[in-house]
Image (cartoon, rainbow, N blue to C red; front, side, top):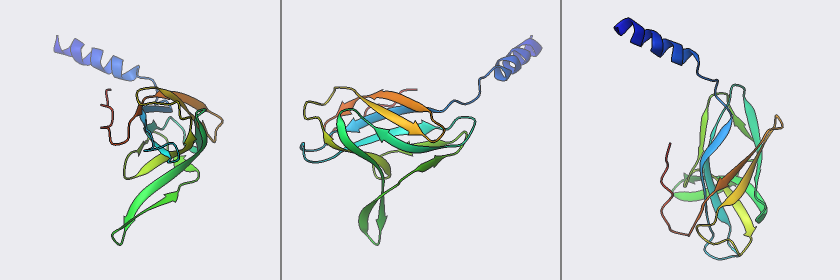
Amino acid sequence: MRFFAVLAGLSVAGCQSPPELKVDHGYVRLGTMPSRPSAGYFTIHGGTAATTLIAVNSPVAVRSELHESMTAGGMATMKPLGDLPIPAKSTTAFKPGGKHLMLFDMNPGIKPGRPITLTFTFSDGRRIDALVPTIAPGAPAPTVQD
């Protein structure tokens, strides 16, 4: 009986599909006022081949930029990222205090709880649309569910 259980486990493992380029665990923290940018967070999972993230846009923001926060000499700073390599089979997290998306001049009609679309554009021509929730400034991040 044990032999068949091991054989079944091996056959299932052999049937797993290769990793797929995908985005999950996304959300946008709205700015404290309409004149302040909102911040987007998400995780990118690399597929079978390396690619490069070249843009993330939303139809409800006039402009967007990829940034990274860091602390140097006791001072918090932020710099634009530009294009971001996504290695094959990798996980790249955009989270508070690190890499993040800045969304400028958001539509003032977007209120906490309303989902918005983020479009991820990669150098290999792929685009991924992700519907992500919005949260209020200071609100806890949404609970991640796998």
